[in-house]
Length: 117
Length: 111
Image (cartoon, each protein chain N blue to C red):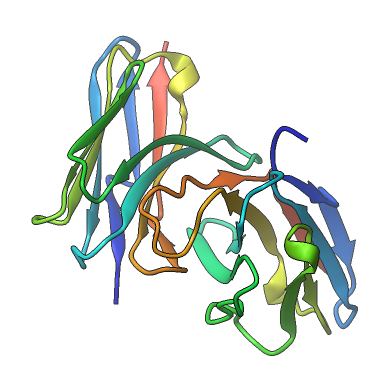
């Protein structure tokens, strides 16, 4: 595809359930980022993948959150035992280069709006 | 710890005016700074990226400047149009992995 895609666009779940959010980055992009944007808040960094390197998970808010990136392309963000405070828009971005490159323009997907009842 | 601040939080101006949005950051050791716009309920659209070695970037009616020594960036919008109404976010890449976003300026252009 031409851009970053995310699915589903909307997800409503009950407290305590697990959810999986998917991100398809732009083909050939080596870096992938997950962010969370809560209502009225700025973007909060969650996790970063760069090629085959170990991901930077320092932004994950709790051990209920995990993410993987298979084959260096598609990424899945999993939230276990969802809580109401997990309700937010989850945004994925990819860039051609990452790491220490100063030229790594990020391209964002449309996001997944998660609502935990 | 890098902190990114955008002031004002909201701005309303009449159509046709030139305007400046501000972004400040606390740690001048950055890789780059990127400006985005976000329309309600949508994802982010990249506007301009300024590398650490650059002072400014231009795209159409937009011009972004970067002054690392003072920890400031500005986004200049010329001849504003109602379609420019959106939230504008600046983001600073200050490590190999993390990108820190400001909380944004919500811009409204009055016809």
